[in-house]
Structure formats: C-alpha cells, structure tokens
Image (cartoon, rainbow, N blue to C red; front, top):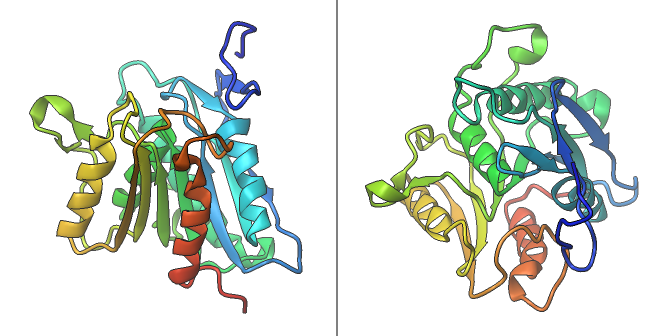
Length: 255
C-alpha cells in the first residue's frame, strides 16, 4: 500500500503491507558462528491498519541476526476487524506465533526458554498485549502449538501506542493486566513522539510497581516511526542499548 507521496525514513521508502488476511511467520537464522540460541518474535507496527514490513520487520530481523539471534517475523492480520477490539486478531496471531516458535524451537535451532518479543508502535502494543495475555489462548486450540506456553521470556517495546488511556490520567489500558508474571521488559521512546511518551513512562512505572524488571530509555527527540534506521537523533541508538540489555539478562549467552 506504499504510495509515491509517502514520506521517506532516513532517506528510504517503507514497505506498507496491507490487507493481511492470512497470518504467517518467517524464520531468519543468524550465521552459525554468531548464533546465541536466542529467538525473538518481531511485530511490525502500522496502527493496526498496515504493517511496516521492512522498517520494523525484515530490517529488524537482519539486526537480530547480527547479534546472534533468530528473528521470527510475524505478519499478523490487518486492518483491525469490524466489531472487534483493534488488536483481537493480532493478539491471536501473536499467541499462535509464540506457541509455534516454542513447540518447534529445537527443530528451528533455538532455545525454547529464550524466546522474546519485539514490537514497534502498534506492534509495541501487541508485544505488551502478548506479555500480559498469555495464560490462555484467545482462540479455540488448534494443535500442539496451542498447548505450548505463549509467554515471552522477555519483551522489547519501541515507541509504543495504546498502552495508556490519556483521558483517564494515563492509567494503563484495561487490556494490559500487568502481574508479577509479565516478562522483563525494555522500553524506549522519544520525548517528542506525537504518539505520546506517557505510553512508555507509565507502562514502565506499572511494571516497576509490579516488581517486573524493566529498563526504560526516554530520549529528547526523534519523533516516531524510525525503526532502527540511524539518524542524527540519539534515540536511534536504542538497538545498542537493547543488545546490552539482552546480554545482561543472559538471553544472549552462547551454549
């Protein structure tokens, strides 16, 4: 759905994938000499309308591969379904993707106990929704993949939206039931983000209050929707901080 009039990010266009009716995952394996055994389900953003497939998807898997992590790129259903919550179909797809990854981890070459989730913008909300809605599936069970745990071992949430209710004093959105079982999380956002940095700040505070390990980075500038394409804004160094955080958490250890 990319149009010639769409703006460029870091001087390059963005693949805007729309009308996804059949969800899918693609596996991106790191070089054998770098492989740490960790994996991350990647959730592109796009307002639950489209998927920014390269900016917040394939390019992210390439970066994950460079630090020895398998990327599991999720193409979840968009746009949002009429009559349902904006993320209903997407959460079903994310739960299914995590379960498939965990069931097939050995076959696909990674550790079933080191599978994280990473999302941007609406995909950041999806990563948070999966982090807090994994006790049971939101759809009828299909096969063994739906009996495997769909709880991520860690979450990376970049310039998220929909995490708080602005009109209610930025209380955490009711679909995000944060508990001590919410996975350790890394959150990054720019202060001038038009989606509102309160999403990141109040979500991180709620995690801290629930005694969930959290690392929060708030940068002064950079706006929204930069993926990991570098710019003059310091916010685009978040991948280095996230890699350090994953390493410190023990998820990037070599077996």
